[in-house]
Length: 330
Image (cartoon, rainbow, N blue to C red; front, side, top):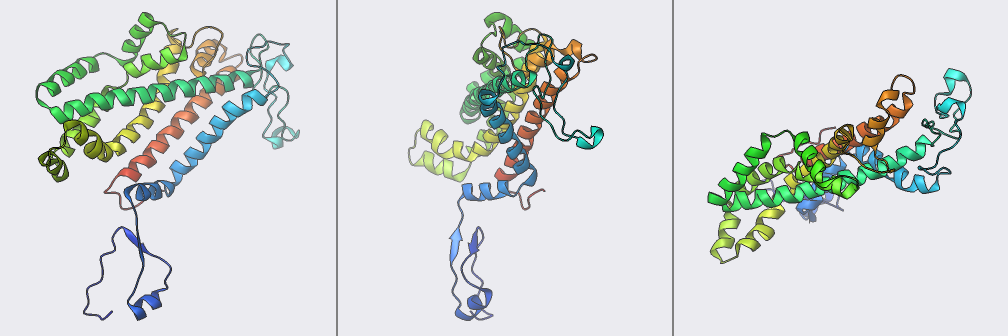
């Protein structure tokens, strides 16, 4: 390659398998193009905070679902209080000189002798199911409403968005509480549905804005000129380009669902019966904060950790899907 020749455009590709001097001598190179998903995955994996959060979240999920069946105490069985129910977990050996120790009841026991480690793992299981189910349902509802509103515009947009505006004037917890009273919330899936029905509004606004922008793109106009149906244009041409906003919004809804479930538990609308969730644990033992604080702190720490991890993962996904992103925030 001479100095007068134009350099080839290799944006979105990388030179592989050849040393720089070979390139200069032979004037040949091999390029490997990256698809959009490969570039998204590469940017996400380089986001350190998101990867740490993903690792912690996976560890918590494995602990909850694999640890409870293997643990020696069931979550719904009472027993004799040992050491006043205090936690036997010791991970700071230099304070007392006893070394690292798990003990019989690492998270302590509640007032009737239940092993609180087992109860917390069961609560984490239920809260994760509620959060994921509610987040996905809210994402689906908000995406469908926003897609129809943004694509068809006109009367469809006016009717749907005025309904959303009216719902925005009502506090989220009030809507969830009214739905909880109307349908009951003994089942975790009913509770997830209640949270989803009260949480999809912001998603519909975001997706509406995305569709209103994307429907004016050249490739959409070309598909419409070729006779493509509205269904095909929405699902094959617009939706794949809006998937970044949808995925990021879903992570935020999942994180918020855990906090909403906790708030509903304080209102007596959480998981019913003898089952547990992290929110129900915090609500049940809030009066024990001064006398037996571990009954409050352990589920609270799980809630905060799960919510933060999901938020940081969403932050990493947002950066990964952003086509204007030129660097990865560390």
